Image (cartoon, rainbow, N blue to C red; front, side):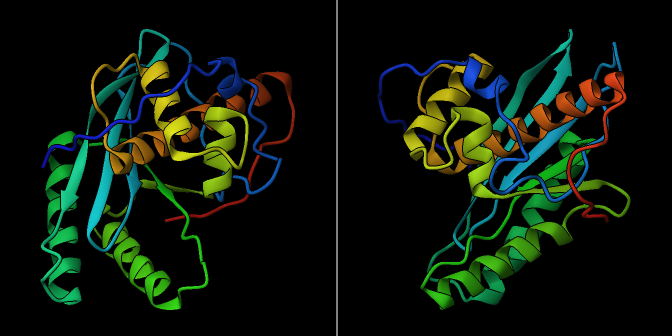
Length: 214
């Protein structure tokens, strides 16, 4: 199901994405592989799981840069039981993976707030989403603060700022729903971590991050 919502705002400098340091605050939970020089068709699926709306965004390495492939939302009936919603998330994400065949998956880490019930439902939705990822496909986890730092340069950035940077970096026009924007932001965060890994490898520095393997 396509998503449509957008908040207008002033422009933010794109260079803040390139200046991101994942060692500040919450960093990626897995060491991203290096982007091979000249590699084409490397596709990253970003996921922003939710028990009612799951955002997704796909980007691809083309002509020495990351380009937009697709984005949208998986919306499940709010009146359905949690078990039914989880099954629908799994089924629709399985179809999405089969259609777009991503090389890697990047997902937002669960943020636990005071509402324990909401956190548990979010964790279950995240589990359903991860179960849709085929065995052997790399999964990389990023904290919300790390994603905001990567795109905006501030871990306390607002969603509208993140959405603006997503549109700027991927040259997107028109409306972009919050969940789809968040999913694309996760994918871009992973893409930038890949670029840093490439620079680190070229300079002989130690790899960044700790492993979340699948």
